[in-house]
Image (cartoon, rainbow, N blue to C red; front, side, top):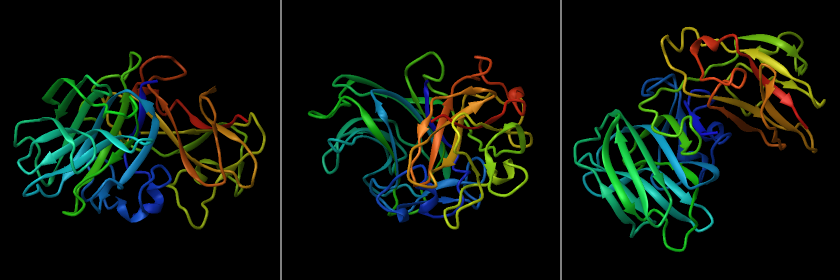
Length: 349
């Protein structure tokens, strides 16, 4: 598995922190919000808006990683008069150390730093006038965490910075990062993120730069078979799970208490993703929780092929399943795989 995480920011149900905290964490819900007006998003209706400065904006925990590739559509509201502001930070949580930091400067250059403020080490800085205010700049970076590491930075598909043998592992820290922080110059107001991806460098698929991609959120459009879960209201199943999540009151849903039960839904991207688009990967997102104390695990099932299950809790969370290739065919995804390829939940434990 090389696709570690991605986000379109289009499938959240409210404008403020509670919705995004189904998938991310942060210092407080007020530090970030999803703008669903569609006025400043790059793809679809939503984008992440950074409302305060610092490192607490949208924090995503990941498994311990030593070599990553990241891509992010980053909207700069204002280029600062001096200093720098964070775009993305990769952190060793145990030691509270920022290993790799992508930052921007007032002259439109992009830089790579190692270590925390107020005395980070500047590993490299690009030429000026590469990043522009009041528009999206697609920023990508490939790096590993080590005392002697290589870092490559691209902007809008062009390589702008190549660093060899630099120190991305802060002295005394772990040789990995396990958190990514989507940051910005909140004190200036208006920085945004959209179409974000994160890859490992392992494997043979999705292990290198993807380019200035677009990420779309597709909701269920019809029922398929089998339909073994119990709908909270009698009738179709997909209409109970085809909305962006809400937190209060609890949304309608489908439920199961029997291991082995599966629900399957059709996802039709027609009118949203236009041919001849190339599908690089798929992430199946489900908001799920236990309705009482106990233990259950839910997997993503694709046409009878189930992923590994993830344990649930009594708190609702967005559980994620990534697919670099079509698990039914074992081949690269094709737009023509849809709407014929169905997805849904499977209770595995």
